[in-house]
Length: 164
Image (cartoon, rainbow, N blue to C red; front, side, top):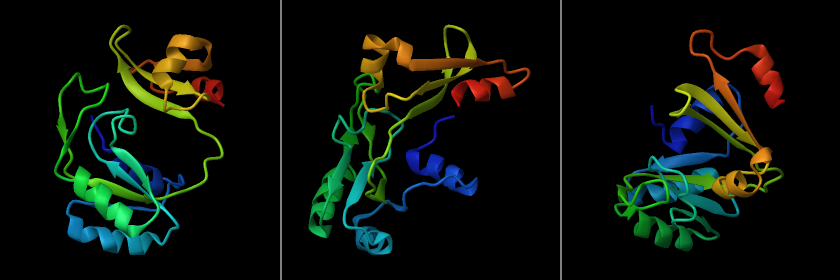
C-alpha cells in the first residue's frame, strides 16, 4: 500500500498524533485559501508523489511569503519529479501539501516496509533523522534499528519497548 504524506498525516491525526496544520491543493486557485487557513509566518510546499527524497529533488520548498508560495506551487503543480527512489522515472505532481512551518526540536526516522530479503514487514527506526537516512545506513549503521514483524502474530509488546 502506498500512501501520500497527506494521507499518512490524516491517519496520525485521527489517532491523536500531532501533525503540522496543512491543506492539500490540486489547483493553484486553492492556494490562497490554504495559506489563509494555516495563518503561519512561513509555509512548506510539498509535492505529493509516492517517493522519498522529495526535498533533495526540489519537491519540498520553504516559502516566507504568499508570492513565493505562488511561484513554487505554479512551478511544481502539474510538473513531474524524479528522486533517488524513483529509478529515473518522472512521477507526476497532481497535488501539493501546504503546511505551516514549525521549529524542529528533534528529527527521527520511522518507516514500515516490506523487507524483500526476509520477506517480513519491518520497522526501520533511527534517532539520526530522516533526510539522509541512506548516508546514516552507509556510515553509521549502528544508529538504525530494524524490527522484523512476524505477520502471523503482529507487533509484539517487547518490540515496541525496543523502540522506546
